[in-house]
Image (cartoon, rainbow, N blue to C red; front, side, top):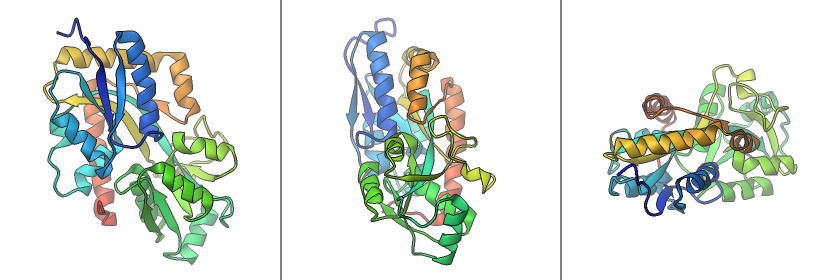
Amino acid sequence: MAQSYPTRPVRIIVGFPAGQALDIGVRLIAQWLSDHLSQQFIVENRPGAGGNIATEIVVHAPPDGYTLLAVSSSNMINAALYEKLNFNFIRDIALVASISRVPQVMEVNPSFPARTLPEFTAYAKATPGKINFASAGNGTVAHVAGELFKMMAGVNMQHVPYRGSAPALTDLVGGQVHVMFDNMPSSIEHIRAGRLRPLAVTATARVEGLPDVPTVADFMPGFETSAWGGIGAPKGTPAEIIDQLNRQTNAALADPKFKARLADLGGVVFLLSPAEYAKRVAEETEKWAKVVKFSGAKPN
């Protein structure tokens, strides 16, 4: 079966709107797989419920390699955020390959009074509850990164969830909200054009796409968040198919042009075996469960 796979087009289901970081990274991989496996890998956006709608579609799809899931950090966050799900992500999805880790950038409208992270923290402490932070929706990395910042900085900000990062960014650029912890690929062009001011990135070190921007950890040791993108399949998908997809994805990640494209968008190649990927997902799920519990975050 695996020798002839794929014999027809393959769908990759993305649980978020087109243009978000996950969607951008998965489309790059889909193009590579289409070019190297002689069948179309078609990206299908099925947004809603923090990515749970897409996950449920794939959980119930035949385990034959023709319906894949774009795995995101939201899958790890939702395990704690939602009290009742019709699936258990770690149990029901076979992890195929990781693609990238994308840091968030803490950014404000250029008219916002703070020009640095310490100035922002001081302003937030002086005006508790007055700052609105936008996110791409409840349970997204942009949401829990903001909650983690509140927790570690000891500040009170109001969360404003949107249906995806695009409308949140529109309001941030327009000055309707004050700050956002957005995934770099969807924000980097706004920053380069001067429509948004970056205060810090959430990686452990400065990132290639914004080399002059400090890290949050420079001022708040231990702070790190990133959005993970990867590929999953229904549990029970033949190991030969998973291995073939893992090898092809890792070949893309080793390609200098592909790596450069990801880096330009603010992403970092994250090359793992299926077993290593599963271990990292379990660790990340545990980390976000603590933040969700502390913040009292709810899905709606």
